[in-house]
Image (cartoon, rainbow, N blue to C red; front, side, top):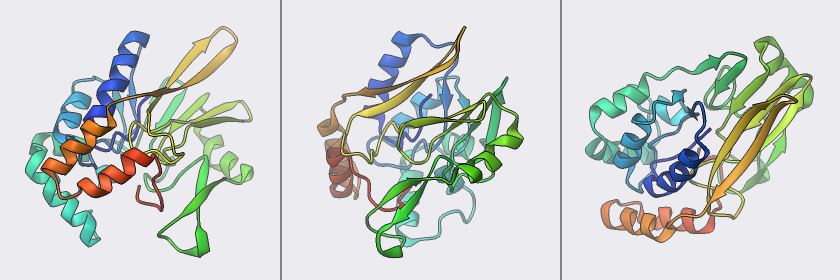
Length: 243
């Protein structure tokens, strides 16, 4: 599983080298594929060529008509339109909210929204939407209400940029780490390996070093977002609810 590439082709290439060595039966992409400035066109093409099972993230919904509402989001959108070919953007905008692989249910956020998070919820500091904060675990009763009706053995999600897993009854809920834009202070790219064994499902969270400075240099030379990208990728600390 990969998730939240956010247009970072440099991190994605490092992750895909490891994924290919693992030789999985299937690749799942949980969305937020191009919203970033470290060579998003190449990131879009690499993901299109994977043949992955895909769902849309909240940032794919920004590609819909009227999907961008804030001035910054609109600025990013105009920049992406000049660099990511229209067929690739249209492909992403048409992705489904959810899908299934046998008894594995797949979404970006929750089963009903790409903008909400399943395993954790964001708690902003001071009660505001911007700035710092932290993730807290979702009330387990709410988690059961969201996952129980799915009748799935495994539920996969992303969006939080934070890897983790828990059981809800007999259902394994896995939050995949993000390829780019980390939240824990570790700038390495993440991906997740899910394996079905005789004893049941097992999950392994992987972290991959990549050339952060090359990604920052690309963004600085070719986008107006280089300063932000540099702070974000070098620190491994995404603050606020910018996802």
